[in-house]
Length: 162
Image 1 (cartoon, rainbow, N blue to C red):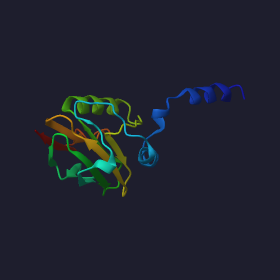
Image 2 (cartoon, rainbow, N blue to C red):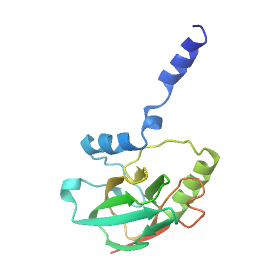
Image 3 (cartoon, rainbow, N blue to C red):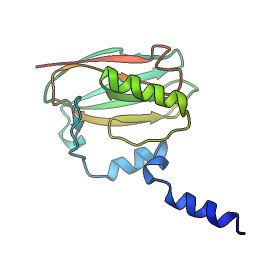
Image 4 (cartoon, rainbow, N blue to C red):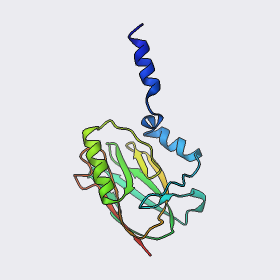
């Protein structure tokens, strides 16, 4: 019993964000308030204010379809991301540098869990939604940061025009 108590306390001290991947993510973000946190690639959008819905599929061929999207600065888009494969995949929006850094971190810690409004962690055969407002013009990416997937080319170009 003495061994269990420290482990239990350690488990209670673990950050709640570390428990947020997968199906629970989709349920928790649906009822959550829209975050106002600003990123270089935009901020979380209000699904009720989305001006466009874009469907994106992910496959075990390590590709997104479509692999290039053109968006407008100020546009709020809902991405409906569907995993057609048998492997877990992600759709994570960001700058090239941010995604490369995160991919390297995921490679070192493949079990790492996270929950951000610009990320969809999608189980095989499942679908998740991300609503995002692109507040800045520029070239951004969406990528799958599951260990090895980014390196295999699982990226989509997001061109945000003025």
